[in-house]
Length: 137
Image 1 (cartoon, rainbow, N blue to C red):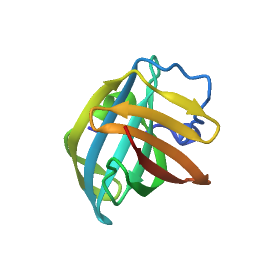
Image 2: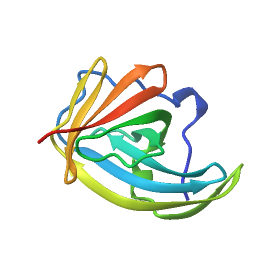
Image 3: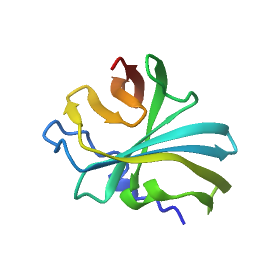
């Protein structure tokens, strides 16, 4: 079962002093009443939360895709694969990939990280609007 954090901790800030090693990464495809989208999750080491973004387009190397910051998840939710029920009905979340990542850099505008698929930057545009940039190697 996928759990939601209490409302008062929906959106934790990305702090520049977060460690560079020991992060967890996951990419899910998520089907719900609004259609299909992708969920990107990044969990800092030694924390129960995972930062989360949603995008309609799968991020790849050398692409820029629009993303939306969603409510933080629990770190353990990054491993979830299956069907769950919430107040909006049943949802299907399929785990496409997960990885332990050790090359993370957070600054005041976003976060850089490297997965098996390549190097990425999730950059804040305004409010909850972000761009996921697939960077050159």
